Length: 348
View 1: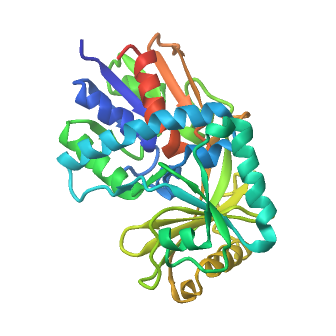
View 2: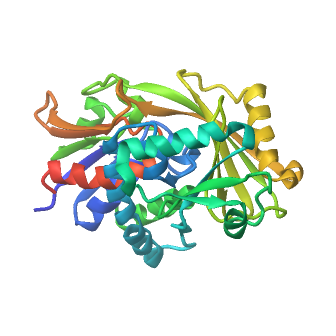
View 3: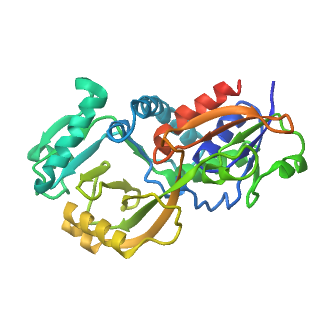
């Protein structure tokens, strides 16, 4: 039986849920407090790595297990979207690399030991020597004596994904309500709903069924250059920061490292910019001529344990709800798995 469903929050989770529900024939209303067509949420800022091995070393086994489920789902969803919408969303599952400068080799070794601690000897990662690393990534500096190759990890073009999802939602007849901070009065204004799905992230502090959620600040730098080519995400281990660089279409790269326990949404600091730029230069000196095309800072929605939460209940009006939050820095890693869980809990 088809239902009329309200979804609060048009980030990654909200769009994916609206898409899957619309494909199932449900009548969907998607609300967001900000612009849906020009998003400035965490999903728009993210590097969009699907990296269960990389993340398990600094999280719990649950994140790895859910990430592996998502890793199996993403290719099918991307293929489905690309058949319906152009331009195509670029998706790559060529794995990722973890590297360190010679003076920081201990950090790389510790990363490897953490993999063993969480996953045992069947973790799947393998060491590469200098020549093997050069074969995989010819444009990386020759200063790196060895690296860890994490197979099967993936990354995607998140901004094209968000755009294509929105186009599909419109095509499927989803009702879009942007600049609309949904609340109980809003719900009543649009009529009766059979189900409320709350995907508001840090916005879930307020309104119906409030949550204890905090924002964790992240900062990213976008550069563009035709002088450097990378095939996969690179993580650079360092005692002060763990930098990642992810290749994007049209010669662009997104670089991030900072994770601050702060809900400050102000622009990136000069110190952060210098650290990101300096680390980038060490990967390949040609990055010195790269053009800075964007600086961005955003808040990752996080719960106290930095683990995701999916729960359900009923609003005062009696309307059942399912809420999902706390994706932290694992949004693209966990989203497909969590979408499936929400649909299961909701009986859809």
